[in-house]
Length: 325
Length: 276
Image (spheres, each protein chain N blue to C red):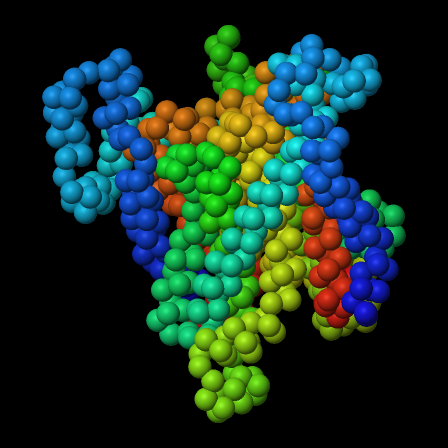
């Protein structure tokens, strides 16, 4: 219960941040050349000034900027993100349609990076400064420096073009209608390369942190005590060291949530996945500023929720946090 | 110097420095080795690398020399990475110094703003900035700098918090020094080393951000940049994959070099904190 109230307080503290972001980006977008009506008129193939004026009145764009901002925030409280003139649907609907692939991709990449980062970090720390450590650390450095979109393209060349093991893009096979387990397997096959691509840089970060954190914890007194009690090495590592070494890894999930969402913009574009990131890119290219603002809101919301979950997880892993405060 | 000796004792740091000098040499010699415009048509399109001695790395979809674009691209990457890093570090120091030195409501307000910037994914903010201000070399550089300052700001703030109550600062206060003098003349020089080392991380990320933006064709299309070339090569990826592959290796090497040099500096300057 205590944990929940603690994390809840952090959550409440992030509401002003959310408003700060929205107001900031809203004002920023006022500086953008052209508005929704311009985009709409361009799509209709032009029109006269009078109908543009009428449309501006219809969308409330003839009001002063503070009034527009007030309007936007008032609609937002009722979960109304406005209307996307490019897609001809409410922004909330457009975003909701695009959310599942992104969440699936992020979850898969995070699990991949976390699991293998943990395993490689432990292996490297066990053989510190010997060849497994050198190999893993070097690979980590190279992965960290690899541009994700480039890795994605090269993976397409190798696995889709030459070996033809995996599909080069898309979320599922649209040629054939599949149901049940076959559809799940099909989507999974489509997500293998994007997951590796997005997860690579995080794998590099996680394995580095895990290695450092393991080395740190291995030197602490309670580990010596555990060894002195005569526990075998596997037991010491899994029961005593690992749990404590995991704390910085969990913190990192929260810190990296935003970076991961940003990375999915690029990865979704490489693999033409119909997700939130690709929508962000499309709305920039098509100057659909209403949708862009909606995406800003939803991404901030996603990052805040991930941090909320991390807070809960953290308190579970480290009882001292719930006891304090 | 001690730190220098320690730096050159680490093989990784030396390799990083050599790679970085190599990239800088490429940027410097570009105009001399390839006097023609790198974006001008040079020959037949899609010549494979090493098949024609005139175009060592081949040509791209429209017959432009890939080697020339790689050399000129080094300029763009270093320029954008360098300037954006300076911008990010300057904003970060300014915000962090004020927040850490004054504390109280100043700290509260500045940290709220920092938090807002950190909550919004920086690539999404970059997209918004490019959507609003367009994508010329100048705007993209400033935009990359503007999305990268929160981490240096937090680092500077933490340093200031630990330094502001030390004896030498109090001595300065007793001498009647002004706040600005104390911040710039007394505390900042002591807070700077870790921030400067962190600049390497900022620069590595800045180069990656710009190349990703260029790949999406949202960066300046009128300069020869590695990201632009990768984006272009995507159209012929199935067969002529080398058009995308070559500039990608250039980005990888540059970012690797910057990270290795940063890590080497860190270990050389903080020998006790060296990660085992």
